[in-house]
Image 1 (cartoon, rainbow, N blue to C red):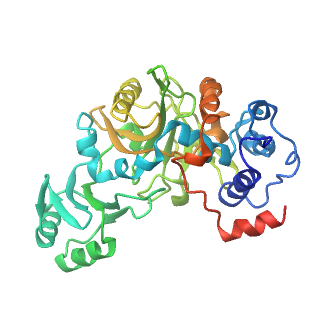
Image 2 (cartoon, rainbow, N blue to C red):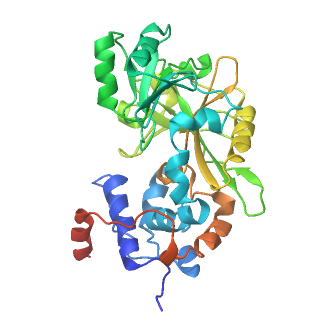
Image 3 (cartoon, one colour):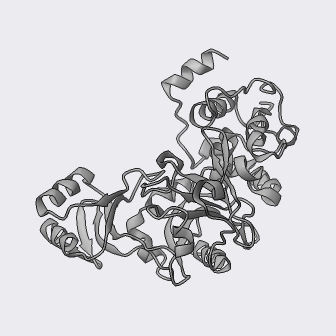
Length: 366
């Protein structure tokens, strides 16, 4: 019988993923690399204290409860969410049908599996081009499936029919053209060119109650001139406090930087407008997702104070929240790990456990 629930291969995958996708190349991860977390070891999982070394270097919170990448992706997520249903729900083109009770960016046209739609009616390519040409607002085009970190999100700067047809051919399948969102002026002043969004997390417990996960919510903004709200566009991330106040500390994870919102943007004492309604709205939306107990929501606030749903994620990364606010899930971690312990790897509906060739080389080096 194996000593640990997670296999050595999974354990090494977690290390490999972390070193290649999260950790800067110059970070010294070896100090406590071979020490194991007492918290996770008591619960049957093998987790290196390397994760505490890294996360605490930014959060300032030392703990043996930081989730490793393999435990999170291979055990926690399949314990909470039906991975085999995920892709169908995450198509941004169905958000308006899935969540009709919340405001969303106005869709001009949709491309679903190669078919064009406007206001729910199927149209031709030429009609789709005409609709975009006739739109009076600034427009954004973006893919609607299998995307992350703002990939493929672009502003449409040319309404020439031939160039639009070529653009649609370039995106090919599953995309949407939307009116550019006008956000609340309090949020816009952080960076006027990007849609400055917030990521919040909700969790459904086994007793049926819904929880807003604090203190892990954060605001993201783009760099000068960027339309995307991520660090790759020169932006940063700030924690959102329980009362909606935005913390002054700006995090840039890959560079291990902590800066100041006031110093960078001149904005201080920023409070997310109507933050209580944002939380209330997302908890309500979660009730429409019966197959998923853990959701990461991207949302902003409109000039009238109403929340606007941008998108949601059923496998939200926890690396950023742990770098800013300590071990993910906070007071609910015990019960979540208990659920993760019950995952049957022989019949799991989770990530395909494929390990890249680069990781096979890494395994041989251990």
